[in-house]
Length: 329
Image 1 (tube, rainbow, N blue to C red):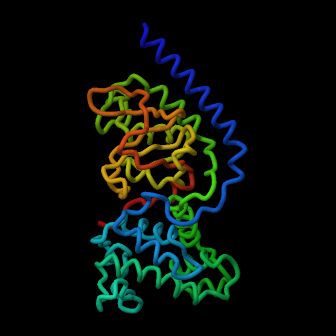
Image 2: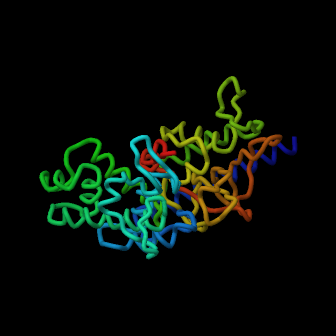
Image 3: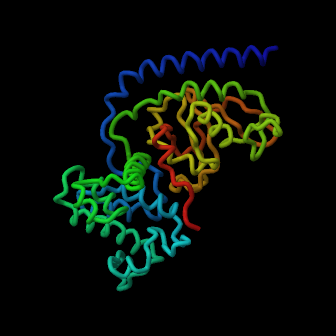
């Protein structure tokens, strides 16, 4: 009976935190500043200096945009190879590589499998395309991305992003995904769906953890950590990937002191590498998350401040839609 009272009191506290935090956030949402640079931990440490350097090569790109392109192309896999023959972390077709590669690390070689060369070449190619379409009306970055997808001639022909669904989708996908790599310079806009996602997660409290659990009837409605967060956002019409480290890029990354209820909070083996994320929970306020922790435990409230806390993501519908369906293997 005492434990039931304790859970009830904590649920009341969560309700007050959600209401109070969203009340405060309402005045901040419209004040969110333009994010610049790279968010801490957004890019694997091995590649961050390269992305930061080459992402400032020309005005049409920035480090976050370059990071979004690389993540969308390969998921940071330097040995990625697509069925179409695209190779390396930047997924260059060999013919395109032959025409546009640069020696990024100054070792006298242009190696498509070397991230130092491939990242530099991706940025250089972006800037080449931007120069080709510099006189087209509209946003220079969007025109560059459209040229990457449809060709510079089509951007010039249509005086901007051409009316092709694939091209327009690509431009939106990359510019949206870039927000998940940006370091915020002001408060990140609050999520309208978060409160309902928390409500779903609260309804699962006390259920036993199940590794690989998606909450299906044959699993007794049980979840593991990323199964719970995926289901919580599915309940509000947002489809997240199944794996925790893929959920990381479903929106921008608020700082620890800017967390709001509904943010996904992540834990990693290497705090400089988001691909090492091994766990995720859903933040409820006051330093607590709803957590599906491990086999033998139940879904419960836990504190987020542990040594392996890497950061948080404020899930957005557009952010989730922008995630790559699958990277080259």
